[in-house]
Amino acid sequence: MQARHLLIIDDEDHIREVASLSLEMTQGWRISTAHNGTLGVEVAKRERPDAILLDVMMPEKDGPSTLRELQLADETKLIPVIFLTAKVQGPDRRKFLELGVQGTIAKPFDPLTLGAQIREVLGWHDAEAVSSDAA
Image 1 (spheres, rainbow, N blue to C red):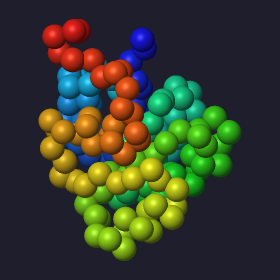
Image 2 (spheres, helix red, strand yellow):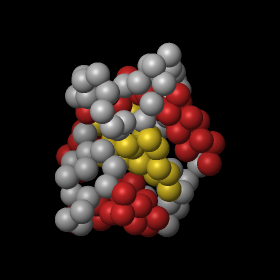
Image 3 (tube, helix red, strand yellow):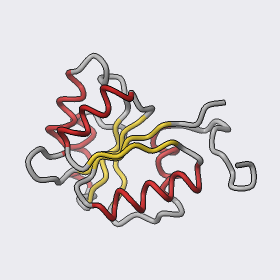
């Protein structure tokens, strides 16, 4: 069975690094990254990941603008997107869901539970997570 593929789009280097390492180690997923929305859309179109973890607040092109671009492109419109954000109050979450994201994950996140949070939001309850002793 092929490992899941996740794209992380975030302007903060340490967030991309921690999330990537966490998801590779705890879930066995293949991770791609992009440091801004423009590059993220290009990577998503080229690599067609199973899901995208997208930062809300980024310079130049923010998460909602990047999401709209992903939703308009035939190659990416069906890829589920989860917002990664410090804005986790009820009104913000509702606004984000209205934009069409699958859910939100709060920053700062726990690297040890990030994979479980993503699986929960996306309904990935299959046996595709690779345990460390099976790798």
